[in-house]
Every structure is written in structure tokens, then in C-alpha cells.
Length: 257
Image (cartoon, rainbow, N blue to C red; front, side, top):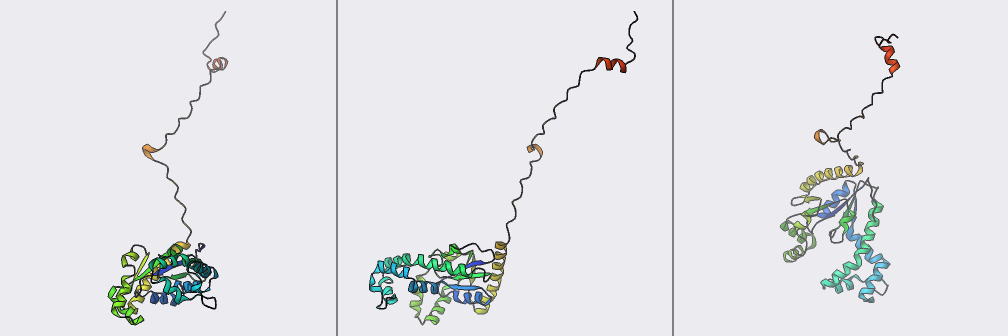
């Protein structure tokens, strides 16, 4: 579990393939933020965690293990990625181990920089957004994404569009993310939008760091709603002293005998 660090804002960075999430991550890194790659952490976890490997063997048998006792990633991919149910089961097994490792990485990074950024394409699917103070989603139009995927991965247009169709639509991110970073233009346009985003994130960090203001005291009701004051009890007039009364009133003569 990640502790609450007032001096660090934990930012989830996500978005569909081809939108430019990696470019946005580089902009964060250039400004001094710590950027954690969730995909890299996941690979290290699956390859290097004995507990995760043991759980995978229990599910898929020892055929996913090499002669050296390490994970045979190609064999595991062949078993799971052609079967939706097996793929879902693979995620169920690996996600808890990956999330634990991510939390440890975030905890270690907190306090070393004002911003810790978790770059995760499946941020919401893995529940990692719950570990973040806010989420930035990088979005771009489908045509732009298609051209980028083709240039980056050497795909045909048909394969690029198939990959895009298998991913979440923009509405998914628009309904969930705290900030949207549009990346339909060139790097200079993205950098200008990023500068504005950075200012908003700095404000969020200040608000997180400032102690909450004390709750205002309830005002006393006025007018007809004010509580009625209790009347002071009436003081009783002491009885007159007849002797003192005679002295103060000399006209009261004593009758002669």
C-alpha cells in the first residue's frame, strides 16, 4: 500500500496506442519527473518473481519453463494470446504481483521528485489508477494514430486499424481521466499543451501540500430564529422595618396620655 506523500503528486499516464503517450512521458522526464514504465515493471515481475512464476506453473504446467528453469515467454504467449479466456486468466494471475511491484517502485520514488509518473497503457484495467492522485490521458485522432503505428511498427494499414479497433475508445478516457492531453499535431504543439498541463499539475500539488482550512464555526441564528433570552428573576422587596420607618417619618407623633 502506498503511503500518502504530501510533497509528491503521483500521476497516472495512459492512452491508446499511437496517441503519443511515450512522447508525453519524455516531456515529463525532461522536466525532472520520475517516470515509471509499467510495461517494463510487468516484464521484470513475470521474469524475475519466483512467486509469480510458481503461480504460472500451477496454472499452465511446467511446459512454460525452459531447461534453465526460467519462463518461456514464447510458449506462454502461444498458450494464452490465442485464447481470450486464457489471456484473462493470465492477467488474473500476474496482476497482483505486478501491482505489488509497481507500488514498491512508486513508494521508493516518492520524495525524490515533485512528480512521480506511472506510464501504463492498461492503467484502469489493472486498477492502478487507484494508486494515483490524478490521471493524464493522451489522445489523438484515429487517422493520426494509424499513420504513427504504421511508421513505428512497420505494420500495414489493415493491421494498424485492427490494433486500434481492439483498444478502448476516446470516450473511455474522457469519462475517467482528470486531464486530457491532445496530440494531433507535431511535437511543438504537444509541448505547448504540456506546459499548460504542467501548470495545472503544479497547482494540484500545492493544494495537496497545503493543510486543510479549519471548518467555519456555525453562526448563531439571528432575528426570529435567535433563542429567547430568559428574563432575570424578579427580586422580592424586603418588608419595611416599622422602627426604621418611624425614625425616617417624624410626623408620626406619639399620642399624649
